[in-house]
Length: 335
Image 1 (cartoon, rainbow, N blue to C red):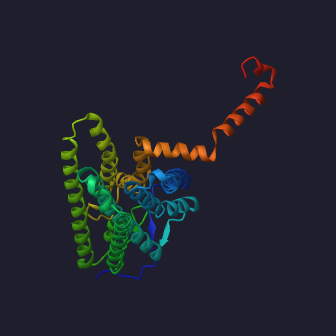
Image 2 (image 1 turned 135 degrees about the horizontal axis):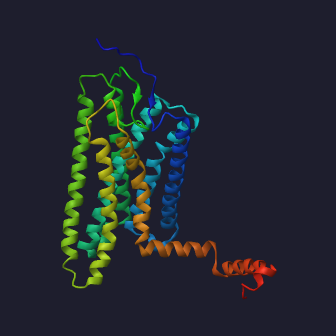
């Protein structure tokens, strides 16, 4: 007979049992977290303030960055606190909240990426109807649907997981509460609810992937018929970043969730979980900004507004005058 007891909380395994290494890992994750947050908030600020970025593509990008901020803020701050305090316990309510939020944000991001591929499809394949189809109202509706479906799936998965009884070990072999780890410590023989939810989620994911593949098939077919190389390059420049972001998100997500439940998790699997939670939010701003002249120009305009060139020149001249006040430096500085 199974030993089923009332569970009040779980223990997160983390990456090390050594307190010093826990602190180092926590600080490392904190640095990564702050860098990701600042980069995504910069993208959100640029798109919000710059009038030249008020287009459907950048509206979706702003919401993608917002989702990334929320997504990475679910597991990383909790892991940092646990690493500093050396307490790896988490209450069942907090664990349920982690599952709900991460599932909701991940599902919403997949649907939003699908909407972004549809935006690129309309922009390249039907440019004359672009303003009508991708109106501000339709864009807001697409984003709202992605959030609503994400919340629905998050609630469905959370209710399915935490309606199961848990027995045996209460140690979760991850640094956050994820569905495969919780299934591994469940002692229920009937997983109808969770497998039904998983099947629905898998079907939704496959529909999104098929839509994106078909969109890019039509996009590439249209782009290759453009007579000029410059036109092809410009079209590809708006599509490749989105395709890269989608591929990274799907690849890292599959390594975490498309694996059988196990009572033990290797260090490699935990590192893949880190990539799933950190890599997409970290790469999205870089992918969209490094090769995007619009974002780079918006950043320059923002810098000029906050720090005018005349003020910068006066500041540099004052620094040079102060430096030349030294007898040693006088021969090296020419004003």
